[in-house]
Length: 453
Image (cartoon, rainbow, N blue to C red; front, side, top):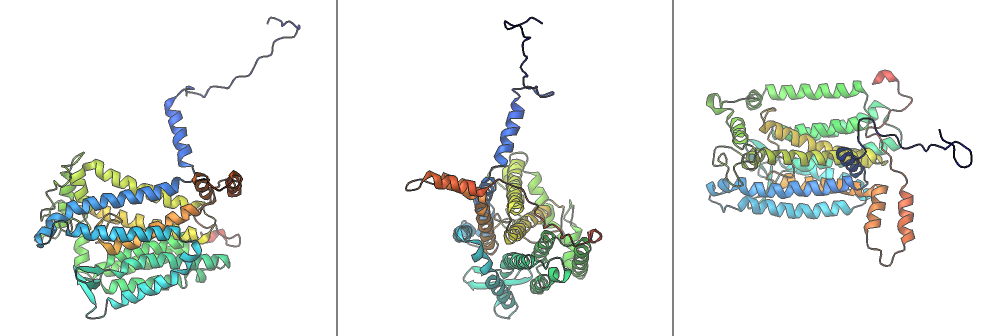
């Protein structure tokens, strides 16, 4: 080793070690790092919920217009009849979404009991002769005059989410959720009351969604495994009895995976839904060019609108819809997982369970993987009664996403600074503190024995 001018041996500078097996200028690695940083930004959930819900609603309006034209003409109505009603519902829902997204959390909690009382009252009115209407064999509708009807059971989903989240949050603040009695009462009896009012009308599809919301709330509250399994066993036993005693529900169960209409065309709707998806190909036959909607596929613009989407927009269209729902579900889980407020965690988790479970049941029925439950695809299918409470629930998620300290600081930095000092923005960002992931499920108390899980 040659000596330096001072007589001392030269010092080697330690360079950065190259990543093993990954070149320094690897574009895949750079893209992965950028994507990871983008997903970890504080406003990611806010933009996913807002953008995903708006895209699903707009695409749903387009598909409702395409899928409902033939049905409207067969009923001697204008071709845009169902589209105009859905557009009006979407406009009203947009107002509800904006109002819910701007409400503080305290006001959301204050609305829990009035919404629950109103939903129970309307669901009871459905069973009054002369007021309740029967549609497709289910007594779950109230006429508002003319061609407008309302289904109160759809508002029961929102009522259970808000009221259940407020109830569990208050019990958690008082440290009562470590006792199974406080975890079950009065949440489970109230949910069973709503389920009973729904099942009086014969709408088992909505009852399944309400049950999913109940179990989602119990899971978020940290219910012990024995308690969770016990309530699930009771619900499954009741569901088995209701299915076994109804020939219509048994026939729907028998149509899972059917490829032929069968005797008396009992599986007609399920089979023609598969036909619509199969004829769509990769990019579909074109918007408005569906063949199955010409009287072959029942409920083409409501429960089976996903099949028409697959026929007209192909695999690319259906995968796009699935990706939007997946992004919406991910954002809801992220909101519930990052908050310190128990009400926000329970409400965000309940809304995410509601929308995700309903989308899975609807799409699973169209694909022939699940029995036809008669539930619409959230934000997508025709039906104002389903669209209004769902858009209000989306507004809840947006409000919760904005309420995150890091998101508030990021939004404050993007606002116009006229008349504001930069120090105020920096102070708000400093007050937000470091971002931290929290578990979405409430951690068990230290007093609880490990044998209960």
